[in-house]
Image 1 (cartoon, rainbow, N blue to C red):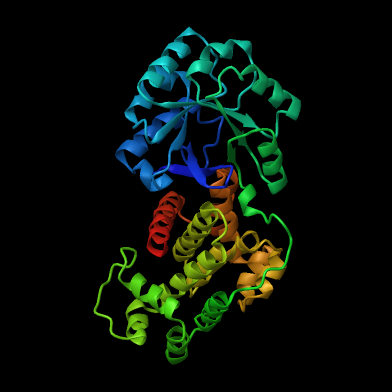
Image 2 (image 1 turned 90 degrees about the horizontal axis):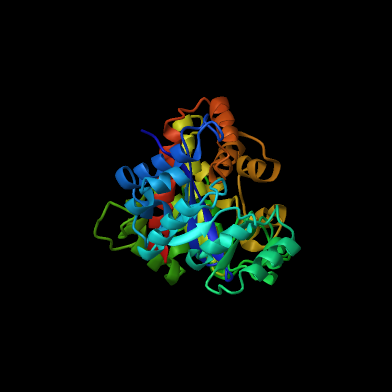
Length: 406
């Protein structure tokens, strides 16, 4: 059985990762409303309990999972650890006595309760003592409507508000002004301010190494010399060769030996990860996590597609697909600082070439745009059964890498 699940980040006021919402579909060609909420929730719960752990998809952060009245009545929510799950009641569920009894019971058991895509209705007042989070579609409700909801819930100060579909930094600031605590959307992946940011010396060293390793024939002597003049970089290299992320272990006595043990492909990935981590140090960790996931996903898709001699190029394209947000610049200005191949530049600047199609696929997957993802899968003649596994593997790999370089 294959699970088509995507995750969408939920951040707090400081842009720290608070949780993920998990979105499930039964195959790339089955999009709501063809698959109802009951079936989606049932299979997501089954998958999380019997196929993959929630912690694999959420890096031990809470998972927001949608529940219908039917799945709540069947007690599916109680199959999950209350510390791991936020029970998100779908907007299609009508408030009533049965639902209220379930919510009370879940609250007594220690679950966090959220109302999804909330539309104001006085009958929900009976639920307010037990509701922790109210999710509001920021693209649907006006500021006045939001203020009305906040006014009517002010007697329940424990209720926090989550703004959904926050796609720009301006919307994020507006939502903050309106008193929202949590934010869901990809606003953090857009540049906040268009400005010039120069690369620090260590970043320039990494950029130089990226360039040196982009050649088909790697000059090991030159790369060794670059590492040997940066003690911090050398330390990270040695630590990485001995980390859980890198399975092979060996006694290392020189920088050159570490590079040989690592191998060209692993070295390229290591440098890409380190560069992105270095320049995004003052950015939300989720931005780095998303970059890593895109990089690994693109690489796995390239391997499956079999049309590229060097799949590390797909990895680097995925990693750099958010470099504009990391540097707070336009993509053009950001890439001007890096010596990259035309294939990568065409993908990131012109949305052209097979690399661009890999990136389009991962972006659709992130937002659970399954129909659009399926179109690309058909165009590339990929095996649709391998794509969900690639995404799941990419998420797990990103989690491991973040732990290794932190």
